[in-house]
Image (cartoon, rainbow, N blue to C red):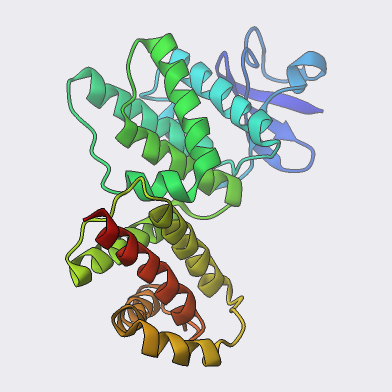
Length: 281
């Protein structure tokens, strides 16, 4: 049971919570007709979001000063759909981060400004379920607001969703996506090729790089592959040498040791990419 402290609008209430003291409650029609001191219970308590963190609360209150109530309602519905779709609670920061991001993205689009996303391909391949959820969200925004959300913006929405699902900081998710993109470009430059973004080997490479970065961050290293390393060094010397260059970049960016065994997997992925591009030519 929670008690109303202040109604900010029809959908947002500051309340006293028995476990979290003062909280911000977000839910469709939650504040309608409510007065300070009233309890929120029954059907009103079934579907709402609780902002417990004091910093998140203040950021959300500030956001309400420039984001109109209809947009807040739309975002609440979309976040609720995301939780239902993934059957998981989302980090509460998504109420601030994604709402703020999309509000200004829509404003830019309405003013005729384009949105560029150089990491779209890597984002879609790394987080396919989140990307599909972002596509569906964009379609509903088009229906509700009459504004088409471009692919580049769908990529940014994907990162927000992934961040909220995994409780990872958005800046960290962005850094990892950019690192994958940089590593792919290094391969293209080294072999003077342009990798086909639709090729299955490119998909496998990007997914491997994302998993490799996560393993390094979590220090869940792969098993020793010394014997295979020697074979690959002889069979594919160029791919092998490049794999070590990429590992050095990963190590510098992540500030963590990349295990030698990673050279095996990278060499094999690079070799498949290069072999496929040569056949295409």
